[in-house]
Image (tube, rainbow, N blue to C red; front, side, top):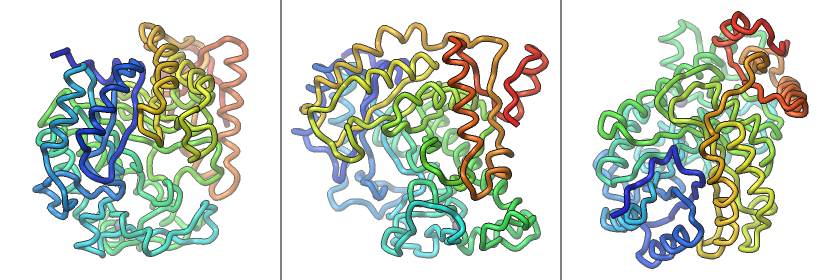
Length: 422
Ligand SMILES: [Zn+2]
């Protein structure tokens, strides 16, 4: 049996998911694709896309009709035989196994038309979203522990790790649990509209950050209590190109310093890997930084003859900034071996340089307050400024750092020079 490589040391990482427990035929094909492409790490999913358990969970027993452990033990065993670690995908804000039993645990979005979001939520669509301020927030860490302890995954990649729905843009939550908890914590009534002149609304933005980070932290601590080496990744869903207010996610921009991987998604903007990875690194998490990119030439048009060059560039850009790109595919891995192999070949030689130092005299200060309270509901000017400052540094061949609130004063004192953003 080969030694299983540490996920955090892997130069290439491949996303897969399932609607049902994995079949032997699928697993055998996946293992063949991993061997032939050289890709070093893998994800699958212990749950379906609505986060219904595909194994017989004791914590959330409302599981898939074919739920079993054997399929996963075969999947994980075969991948471990060839030295590949495998994480489970899980969308943190989904749990249809609970919302079917407890409809009052569903996220209730702040459906204020003044919040510019790409889409509104239908009642059917909302069924899978479960609010972390309900008892779900206590149950989820125990479910995550089952995934690594009983199913045997090497960790969990938390997608949808926001307090919102519709790709992290439509902010929640106005459920009865949130109303009660907000009132208990602040003495104020929970606001029902986005009103920046309201003290309660401004407090609510920061309260959501605290509530969501409490759940993230308890997930990491509970998983590490049963498997200290397990890898926990959180997707912070922070894109540049989407023009919605970033406070909607409920994910703060501050140093966390936890024993997790801070992750995000590049989607098709692979050359923004430099900035995005440095943003992740600014969280100070000890297991590193990762950004996801899809193996398609146009969004959701998954084809086997994907052009590899942009993906190779994305992988190199991520490593140059100190992180690793992961890859998602919409086809069987066997159909895209050439592209997977190209990314692996580009990324692997750069791993020894991943943890290099940035220059000590230039940093870009990305301010939570500027994002939330200057941009408010309008165009996200602060993000254009942050990216512009980063481009300036890159064109001058200066690999700068990004600093978040709470770290800027230390950098200022040490270096005396900071790119002031506002
Ligand atoms: Zn709620």
